[in-house]
Length: 49
Image (cartoon, rainbow, N blue to C red; front, side):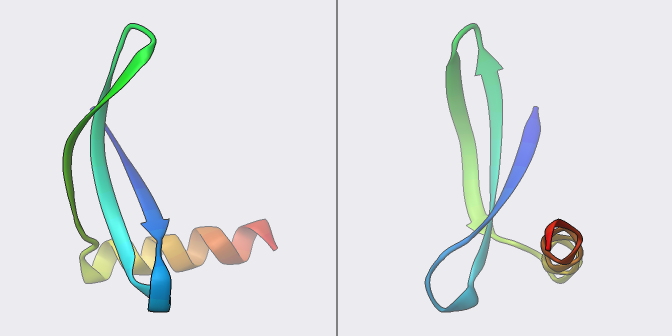
């Protein structure tokens, strides 16, 4: 199981929990990222710049 953090409109960060099943991706849940997850996302974005 993995988690992907994605920024959508108006700076909202979502957390997608998913699993890989062979060649397919199965979404388990999609929710607003927690405060801690949002901070991790910000740090990761700054590192890419």
